[in-house]
Structures are given as C-alpha cells and as structure tokens.
Image 1 (cartoon, helix red, strand yellow):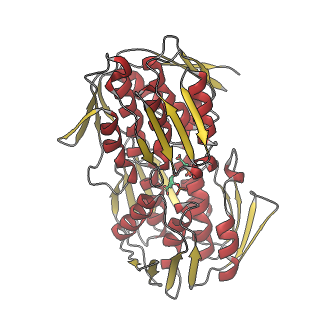
Image 2: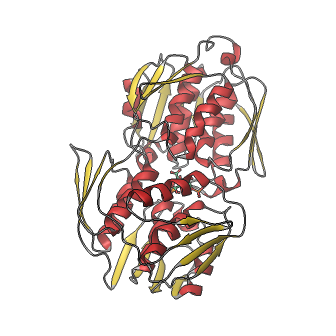
Image 3: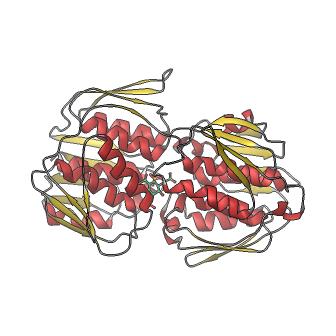
Length: 432
Ligand SMILES: O=C(O)C1=C[C@@H](OP(=O)(O)O)[C@@H](O)[C@H](O)C1
Ligand SMILES: C=C(OP(=O)(O)O)C(=O)O
C-alpha cells in the first residue's frame, strides 16, 4: 500500500502521452487472431494490457515484449486449444473482450479477476451466450466457467450498460462460419469505443457493416497480419489539461492523434469551454490558462453530458470544483460500475479536500470554490481517481495526500514520473 503526496508547484513543459490502452487491447487481440507475425509498436505494458497479453498466451499465442523498443511481437500461431485459464486482473476490457473471443474459438475457459472486476456487470453475456451455444457458469461474478462454441446468429443487447460487450462481439463474430447481426435494443453509450474497434478491425482487414439498429458482421473473415503503431491516449491527456487549467503553466502534449476515433478527444472542447486555452500545432497539443491567478482561475462551470465519455469524469470533476458557478455532470450512471463507484469516489475525495460536490442519481452537482484546503483523500484503488486528484494540489493551501497510489499502474505506470518531468511534486510513500 502506498500514498501519493501531491504538492503545489509550477507546471510546464512537454510530455509524451502514453499509448492508448483501449487501442492497444484491440490491436493485441487483432494481431493474435491474424495469420502471420505482427509487430505492435508504441505499446506499454500497464497492468490492464498485461492481462490481455497473458490472455492471448493462455490461448496459445506466442508473444514477446521488447521493452526498449516498446514493441510487442505477436508470432503466427493458431489460437485455440481445449482448455484455458484467463486471469483478467482488474481489466473490464480484457474480460468482456476475451469471453466472446474464447467462445468463438470453442475453448473451455475459466475466467478470474480481482478488485472490483468480479462485481462489474456480465449479465448481457450470461443471457446472450447460452442462446448461441455457450454455457456460462458462476456462483456470482468470478470465477466464471465457460464451455461450448459460439454460433453465428442474431445478438440483441442494450447499448447503455457497457460498450465493451459490443466490442467483444465485434471482435469475435467475424471468426464464425455464418453471418451475424448485432442489434441494439437501446441507444449506444460510449460510442467512440465502438468506433475505435471498427476502425482497428478495418486496419486488420476485418469489415462490419453498420445497419439501422446495429451491425451486420460477415462470418468466415480472416484477420490480416500487419505492423501497427498504437496512437496516444486521449483519456490520459485529460489529466494534464486539468493540471494546466488549475496550475496555469503551459503544458504541451505530444503523441496524440487529432483525427482519433477515441471519444475522449472531446476533452479539448470541454476544457476549452471551462476557459482553458488550447492549440494543436505540429502534432502537439498546447494547453495554458492565462487567467490562472484570477479568482476561480477565470474558469466557469457548465452542464456536461458524459454518456459518451465516462472516463473523462474524474478530471472534469476536479476542474469543475475550481470553476466559478455550478457544473452538472449527467448521464454518468455507469461510473458506479468501474474500478470504484467513481461518482461516490470523486464526491468524497473532492469534499475531503475542500470542494463542494453532491451526488445525484446519474451524476454530480458541483459548486466551484476559489481554493481547496487540501488534506487526505481516498484513491479507492482507482487509477483515474488517483491521477485526477493531482490537479487539486494546484489550488490547495495544504498538500494533497491520496491513498492507493500504485493503482495508476492499471493504465499509466509512468504517471508520477511524467508529472515530475513537468515540475510537479508527487512523492509516493509506502505505508505497508
Ligand atoms: O472499450 C474500451 O476500451 C473502454 C470502454 C469504456 O467502458 P464502457 O463502455 O463500459 O463505458 C471505458 O470506460 C473503458 O475505460 C474502456
Ligand atoms: C474502466 C476502465 O477500464 P476497464 O473497463 O477496461 O477496466 C478504465 O480504464 O477507466
């Protein structure tokens, strides 16, 4: 167990944003399912990515990581086998992507996980997979035992529980003999993640056709091996935009794709709306707040619909706490089902640091305060909570102490180091 102590400091400089965890999960699976050798460049082994790489190995994949070149080599191998054990650690993506993939390969698999993963929803697969030839057995959550081979057909599911079910099916169904349909019975949320899936599938030669209610997926397709470079992570960029908004110094972020399919690139317009200055020049996103010394840093609150961008909420909440007036964050129900209940976690953390946040059924109501007191907040073993709270130190009279520091390894192992490179103070203290 470790705490991180964030202290106020001048932040400025340039940082290389880490590769997108979401894009990397997809690229690793597409590469593993292809016939041939693939190199995936710009890949970092966060804990979540490690879970997906180990899942591929459990299904017979031959994978090696060159740390120096940040490159994963996925050698040609037929995935499959009779049985497998897959430990998804705390990664919802790994679990929800691997279930249909292993089912399409007909591998009798037991899935494990830890932290909050066993409580995160799986009901959609528990209903859909038995309708298509696959038996799922659990005494509640994980471990989950799966047996049978997935059949092509029509898959009807709601779009507002987790887009990861749609992505899992989109990865698996092209492997089946016949054609399949995915039919959405309610509007799709987190749509950007599905767009990202479809674009990476296309990069590996797999096509799906959008229909009025979902997608038509031709069966019998082959994933084509290729060299792939993972783009930068927009969800991680948001923490640095928040730091620029509250801290004032110019932060430059390299490695982001302006035309990305990641829905979280919406952080640009959202932080701009708060009052942050932003410019994308020569592939570098530059962010600064010339009014940082004014009361509320010249930032103003507003209402934000986060149905498509759930991972933005922790960073947006910290910024809103420092912005004048009220900010309403809504359509955020699914945040209660992530690594922590992120609505409860952010409300408790910011209130402990001197913010004014109230939980609503589907989000948060935030009243801005000119300064925070600082103090101690619970990270709740949630990487995005721990990273978001770094920015609170820019406006706090005392230091900000956050528990569960190393949860950042789930998606961004180098977060504290990158923060320090910009002049930030983040001291990690082992507390046994
Ligand atoms: O597909 C993905 O890579 C992800 C989808 C999102 O989940 P939901 O679709 O459950 O919102 C997001 O929160 C998660 O961090 C990554
Ligand atoms: C919720 C997240 O990931 P996952 O669903 O893959 O665990 C996340 O990275 O914030």
